[in-house]
Image (cartoon, rainbow, N blue to C red; front, side):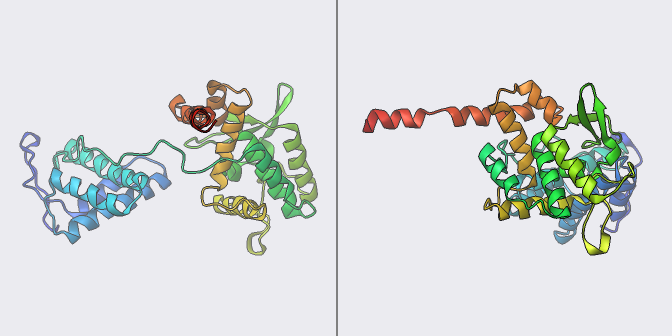
Length: 313
């Protein structure tokens, strides 16, 4: 991997040139994306670079990318394999575009992703049980209750909760809304409606907190070393998990993201349309929302019971 790349004519681009580590660095510098995205691509392309180095491959071919994919599939989840391969595919698209190396990853398929959700949702009774188990006699309890109630009724992601400020609670028409900075967005352009019991819980927490500066975070940490500072997505996820466990709802398939699944499922079960649920969860593609609908259709299918009744009476 030490050889420099020399390409004299784009039309004559072949795999006779070798890839150097410097080319990978130049690609990272070329990427126009958010810091977090660049960090992800950097990590993922380094994984491929290590694979090439370990296997002493200086002039990778299409077969090497396929072999890399198969090695990943042996130990990684499909979603992880997809992430690693995406970086490789984008990298070689760039090398061909720049006349440095042919796009050997073109049309290579990734790992097949399961469209079923990896997390479960809560029933309405389980939600009541969860919220009822939170001790609201402390500031922490008031906060945790408000966070969980907000997430379950509005489908907010942990990052959206973490980014929210007090001033983002605003009146729209005849209801209170929370303007959010959604996933992949730079500004707070969308909002969710805050149900009255949830608004009461949030305002009770804010009153107990005793803060009046509207620019402060809506929810803050109570940890000794960073008390009063903005909460992280990790701390919000931890609150969700600890609360689930305390309510006797311990499962690897129940996490903070389960609250979002719960929002969608309960909305559909209680008369909400697929289109309304898409708008509620802010899905750009309705096919993402249809996953919930299809899962519910299967749950309502009582074929097994009918067959059993025909056999056993």
